[in-house]
Image (cartoon, rainbow, N blue to C red; front, top):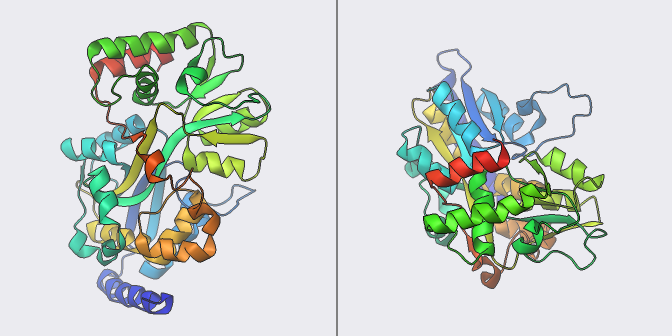
Length: 360
């Protein structure tokens, strides 16, 4: 299908939708909850714009649908769950990883969008849907690895064992998700990162504790700006980071590199879910359909350095960002992807020991 024809279909649908919304004379509000820095943003040096005003995708949607968007960011799954639980029915839509999506659905905080109301769902690769087995609508997918200073590690970093080694001469940071650090420790020890035994978890805790006792772990954070600044100013030698965030740093700084550790690494699909009790489910479904349009989805993938699960958008990226399609950090080969594992380490002992180890 041509881009022109696709746009015609999109805006024909918009017109019909707008007529239905504005007949009451009210301007509807769509409330979205998303990971920090996980949509396209224009530069706002003076910090004068709201998040919805800074994003081309959000601005265009507001204009096309004659609505306003209330856009909120979160840093961790725990924070997202807290926001949903404390304000039931306030949000309409959340973007979160597939493992967390399952938890939100089970807790009846979110629900599976109706694909019958999302025509552009037809562009999503069914193999990836089956791979991640999430009830949500695929947004973008990526992985977790290590960002490091090449001048600090002249031979590179290749493994989680090397990263967590208490003899590592440089400070490091880990993500503010205990199950992430425990999964990394588990694969470093040769244990199952999804269904470990209690003995495995306690061994992983001891493995991490050697680094904390040696004061090698400087930060426990998912704040990309803090990670970036600390890597670039030399406070950190290496950091656990999401692939898209890492590549956005590398684009402007040639003395840093990103690696998937040889023992294995987290691979995730972020999904769009409708929130239980949200006041605008119709607008939420329209936004999902809008994001899945090939042009929008390709733009998001290109800007954010994450992989698109949208077959039609990949065709566009062959022209607009071929270098990204050929970058294994974004689109890992089948052999590399085989080393990936989903972050599904749900165990009370991990939460308890993680809070102790990382002072959370």
